[in-house]
Image (cartoon, rainbow, N blue to C red; front, side):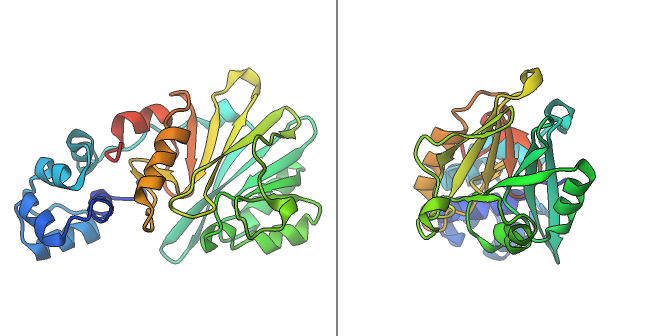
Length: 273
């Protein structure tokens, strides 16, 4: 799986975050404005670009950005360490979105984190594993993360819904300090607004075999990048720094798009931080 954001995406986001014009960014990169726009659109380097100067003017870490332009990817993840966790990627035209299913092996009860755009792959997996869906956790309410929600609600009407949205019914809103038990699993949450007003990161812990903590982050952070700040970039960055990158280094980060990563990998390689 490739990164959700190529180098051009990352630079475009950073320029918006730092209020850097196309003219200023292109001058720093040593290319024309047209070449700069083509680079941000495709991520392809058709001629030499001054990556260090471009990183400096846009507020990115130059060595980390250079590594991404050279093809950095997070290490492949062996999910056998998290035997009760599955990432399911659904697609619609050229968009793909991840959702995550976890379950307790003894009770065969499951929790779903976001729904993706197609319920069938998750429902098929649940049928194969003889699982009952008990909890549905929404990281944020953007359409691609909740598109399949009605299908899960119809299939499992007793499943409880959890959301950070203040527009949700009171019984569905996450409560401060709330702990949801799922057999041997313990699920908590941290508010991470910025990309979305209702952005939430869910933490899964108390795994058997001492598996590391899992953070389901939605679009708050991606491998090597972060979600669109949508006018709240500093709030979004504070959420990543304070609520996600402060977790233990071995914590598995499960983003809404792109490959799995870890806190340690993002601390070392994410040019926004």
